[in-house]
Length: 293
Length: 313
View 1 (cartoon, rainbow over the protein chains, first blue to last red):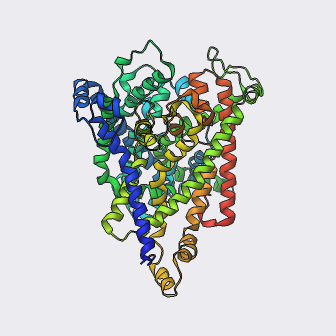
View 2: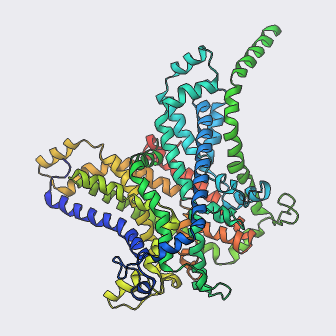
View 3: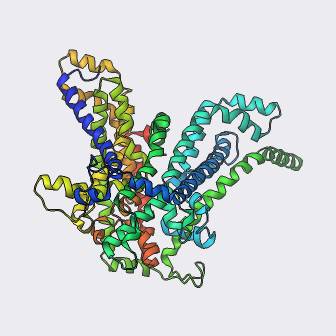
């Protein structure tokens, strides 16, 4: 048993309780405000207990549900396509790297590894994607930049294959006349399921939460906005109004406070509902993902 | 003699041929690395060019160090490097201390349900996107009806504060938001090391009559040392980089807050896409990339010295 001192354990337990509250309460504030009437919000501000319960915000959102459904659809689409390509590409790259007999293996490993040490930064990346590949305002703008293949994941998968898929098994399958791609699909991939699951989860969370690609590369085509960018555009309109008070934007056109909060809740809920189901793998992904895997 | 050589060559060619499918498999990934990583690296040369979109990136004329002169003629350069590095130092120190503290806290909880529950809950802020976090922060700090101004400040009899217009509060706000967002992450990392410690050490220490503090000092902290070293040095390696979302989205891109919220990343972004000041942007970005590279190498050299097993390479 760690730390037998009862008082110490009690105090630490109490602090942990406070911390847990600190991590939940702000979201409860968000949820409570979304159920509060606009008048009450203007009078009392955001509060944890709705002084005047109202479903008006959600009714309004339901009336413009097309926008939200479209944004959700985009988020799911981008996450789905991005994660699929990413996992396939990572496996295709990591498996040859794990083969100790592959000529040029060291050079190829270094090519991957060097990207973790040095990078060109935002301006050149932006110019390559927009001036050379013209991805502005296409769906590829949300999929390709930064997220498609993570060098760290490649190295993680390579290490995993090396230590979990015995060389003899691969050799045996080659002797049986199986081609490399079949060996990868039938032998290596099934044995690497745990690591594939982990990188698929981490990649899909990265895609789902990503909003910077939308900010950088979507200029006019707002129909491509996923849920994060949709929320972001609403909030930045309001911020713009608060600091500039531009007469060209009418205050009445902007969603009112409770509606904004209801939108945030709608963006928040699916991931919170799904979280308990993937929480274990998420924790695992974090612990192997940061300290060397 | 000659014949032998030819034969050998043929053999190695045949041998190489076997590997063609493997190389083909790597092709998509390789192309992606070239596009996403290596072409931008070459693009760093733009920092020495006077970029003119009209005549194209390649034909734009060279201008030596002019872009850097522009950057250093304003106070921007000092400001963005100061902010980036000071924020990172604060984050590294407080983030790791808090992470260790909470990891010890998790270790103290006896009740299995509460232990599990708190591990799950403290990761929620880390799981969500910065956009959603910025909504939460806005609910607290909004000038007209935020929770701070309407509920907390009146308790102490303080007048409402216009948070998004006053730069002096933001170092504290951003530090709190950062710690809140990452506390789950760092504490889980430390906790995963803590559960590996043999519990009999603590039992023996208790039998010997040593108190809490000496248990923490002589058992817990020494076993966390490798994790602390790795995490601190990894973040030192990234000391020139900042989380764009935290410094752009949480302060809602408010121009009045630049003096305390502008970092290299937000400066480079704003220069390129909002102010059309590509020269200073490329110069700032170039310095960030090069200094970043030096920091990673330096951090790794230090890890190699202290703790060979945990080095990056």
